[in-house]
Image (cartoon, rainbow, N blue to C red; front, side, top):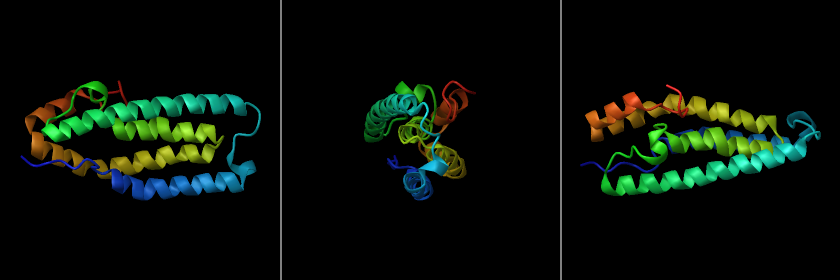
Length: 155
């Protein structure tokens, strides 16, 4: 049976989203008056950002453990965070980790990285689905049919 790649389409997404994120961070630091939400309420954004980032990192770490075990056994992972969406690693980065960073840095521009990340994810993810279908066949197709693609709980 073919071994799956741990990184999937992640590097393709990263080649576009990470430079954009770096640019957004740099522009926010250089021109805070243009790219921040302003000072009122900054402490609340900071607290919310820390909480969101922490939740994202915890769930990301748990998901990596599940994925590594599944890859080692060449087994389709459908439990844990994979029970709620097919792409939890991408979802946690795009929906929690990047927004957490954006709120911590008080930057609406950084938050737009999530939009870029999601659009790039949609552009490249089909190749990963094909690979999963090739390796797991009907088991994967059934999982794909019953599990949301990206947004947990949304079919």
